[in-house]
Length: 243
Length: 52
Length: 218
Image (cartoon, rainbow over all chains, first blue to last red; front, side):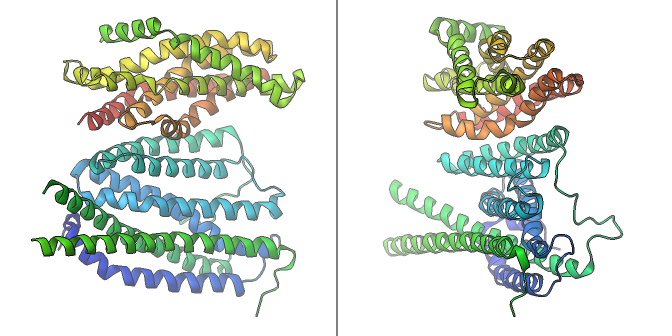
């Protein structure tokens, strides 16, 4: 059984990701098209929310993946700090812009959905506000990567920021619940409940969720490849200067 | 073919449009950057291959 | 470590501006608020808790980039890193010095500025208590941010971007404590939560700051 640590070798990672990339990208594309088309054209209107319920197929998956992206960055940062595998640090760097875009999608679609349903674009509700703060964390994280020249220092410092930021993000989440009871409904999906939403809405949602998940994986693999190439490019240019 | 979206056509359509546009942007940016880095890497590797 | 603290304090006093600038900023910020929202005392007293906390927070933020910057530029930081004092201790002392030069004057000035904003009477002790308990967390978090960005030229703006999201919980509980006191609700719970955040930040963030410093000094 191959160990997961083998993928810390960039060459091995490149080979494996080159094999995985078309599959994940393909599955992501199929799931997204099927799920969104199904959700958009073939689901009934909710009796209370009307056709706005269709927004759920972009809102909920992007929100879930926005949090999972940060979680993935946290784990890869920890791996970098503990075992110092460069691929891990680069994967965290590659994931950040994707996570930021998902956060943005969740925020914008949420605002568009909130306008007809709650009569306001924005409400200082705990869930909305914590997503805004998550967005700010993504911005700061990416800005710190950009600001530091030395790649190893950048990886170290952003990892520390990611760890500390995660702790504060969780504290903020609970602080916000304490601060203001919101308009947002509770979790739409959870495993421990008998009945989530009705099946007609549920199946396309699961498919779009898989689509967003695979899209994230494909993008991270692809962008990590780019980061590895960029690192190699930098090393080669530095060698040339030395010679 | 087009489902009847009723009074909420604008929010639903714009939500889908914004999401798809943002996804296209991030995918496009990733592809552009990958192409640029790959091209420059090949150029440098080629140059060094000749020199060595 | 005491020597480090004394050195930082002396430098701040001799150089001037350490105490004065952030206080002046706090005053100006509070003065500008009525120009923005209008002079009705009702509105002002309603928003006073949030404005005072926000002003204190921004005043803290202003002086953060000086925590390590000067020592970094003239090489003192490298000397300190090779001294027997652990970097964690250095980070903790820097945070303490920042709090004494910035946080403490802000706490002292806050009641006076509360008068300007027509803060209701029962809220004053809670304002002072919440600021006194909350500003150490602001200094500790800020020291961590300053340690992250010490090697970056013109890192001030980046520092704000990194530190402000981390300030969110402290600000929420601090301002909530004061505003609950103005409306006669129980202000003790948020105050204790502020104290908890401060205790946690003081205990853990010097280690994170020291880790960041080690990377930057490498």
